Length: 324
Ligand code: KDG
Image 1: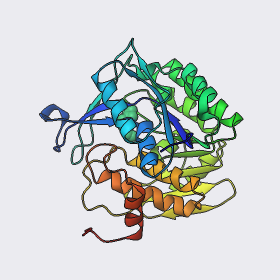
Image 2: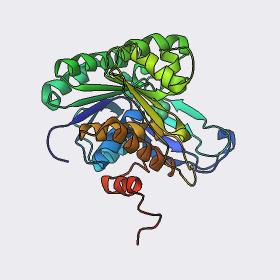
Image 3: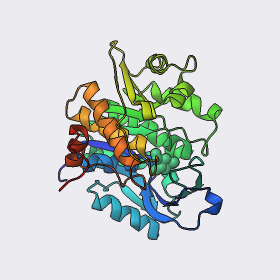
Image 4: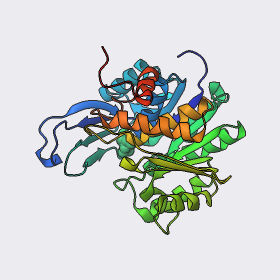
């Protein structure tokens, strides 16, 4: 998609080796290669929905880094500010997929190129074409990666604010990266600096402890400062509350078989952001978000099921099961 980016995100893009068969990681014998990383998933989701999306980050000077560059470029994501770092390898994750037991993730990302993201990349991007973007999307994964990555996130918020951009934060708590006691104060502070906070109820509870009824939790998150809080409720759909007192909810889209739930939250965010960029009401944004999430869980890999705009219309319009 030509032109300057409309929406930007930053973080670590990794290669994911995903076991296609259900079962524990210890028994997995076969793995398929995918590109993953929460923010990159969102960028690809937005590009498929027809937006000009940019991804800021670092990959290693290796085959996995090349695979990431090719995938993101092929998806039409603007990778002008994706740096190849000569001094560190591309991050890797190995995981199971759908079925029982719960998804098991093994990260090989300590000291990775992606974790070396620094405020300089962010500043360079804002000086060279990003200042006109309308939306910045962040997740709670990036500040868990390293001190420089955390500063890159803070810097991006400062620059986005100066440029009048809308800023969203998906909490994305990753307990394999940091403990609740480390994460909660950092994520709470970030929540206070953005416009929209999205997350599962457990994640929102980490920011705003208390009664776990979803609307209550979301309202407490508003108390931290954002103007909108969105709770993802899995099979029960999602709800959004705003500082102006609005509350909307939507049921989930039913999925015949959950092949791989990983990436659903990122699909959700891509759907929400796309709808809001197009000026949709909160209820329509939720409907778009749950449709994108459903589409993601029906396919193996984080990005595979992210819908195009035409596919989204079919999903939301209920066009039937078979296209012929
Ligand atoms: O949201 C999906 C992500 O969890 C996955 O793509 C990998 O970014 C990732 C992470 O850090 O877990």
